Image (tube, rainbow, N blue to C red; front, side, top):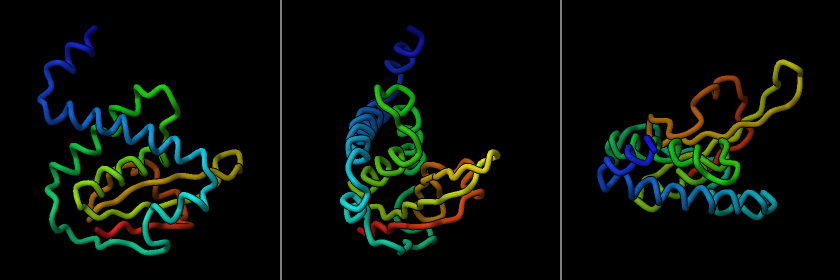
Length: 146
């Protein structure tokens, strides 16, 4: 009940971002069911990066999208981990003509097992997956220039 009241007190722009992020999280989760080779071309230019300089979007826009993705991912009926969040955020940025780079990395966990992680950067700001990304070796990246 408390969360419903909190949602109702949010401004209209944040509510729209939450609905949009929920939609894109679902879309990204569906994409994850396909072979990665089929999905990869839609993610941008492989092994390329966008510029790190901060150009067009405001930090507030990037922050709002990041927060909406993280909030909505907690309430999805499906798994919304790092890759799903990164793809969803990339599509939200693409819709606003904001460039981004999606990174895919691998590392070994404490038990020696191979683990993977994905994160998204736009300009100098990390939108999703920044937690723990320094542990991972980048194995692929996709630049989405708009």
